[in-house]
Image 1 (cartoon, one colour):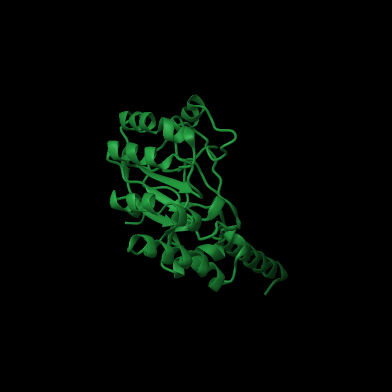
Image 2 (cartoon, helix red, strand yellow):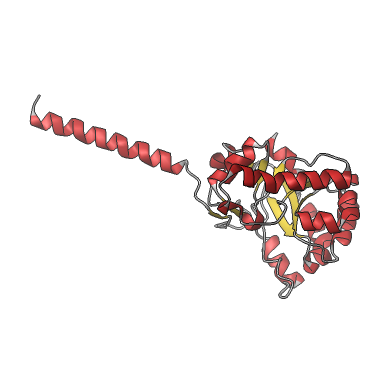
Length: 257
């Protein structure tokens, strides 16, 4: 075989290896905090992991972008006097949402949790102690954070907790996603949120609408914090505006059906 031919074969092998490594790396999910990039008004954003990458671990951040459907979710680490009004508004619009709760919330607000369940909302797992779960690689320790909350929810409601999980602060790792899937959980991120969590610097209604209306999109998984007084104040008007735009609402179990 000529030397030139050997170099051609060597080059082809190197190229194949590079392509294989690139494909492998493109399938990996890097540890980090969930964030979004909005490139066009009314269009779905991109996240740090794609829908296809997340699907491998029974995880999702967005629904079917061909359908004018929204998935409404609330995160709550504590009660701030807003949830009752939020539940009243959801009942008025006949919308079922998902509430991702931590142990402290369930312990101190059993009546509200039971109301969520009785009115058809999904109460889901935000972990027992709201830790940075990406720092927990040990499966036993990871499992304990979710299973302790399951046990508390069962004690308070008499029902099994639905197997939906949202990482605290959106901080995740591929190991976490794998552990959650092995425990039978589906991990739910989001495709629309805004800075509503700081009670010392709540956005005005106008600022909230400036973020939540132009960025809404087909299949959006919306994250709002039920601790936000702004959210409690604007929710009725916000839901009306989205309904006027032609959106309907589904529960997060439909993300995975």
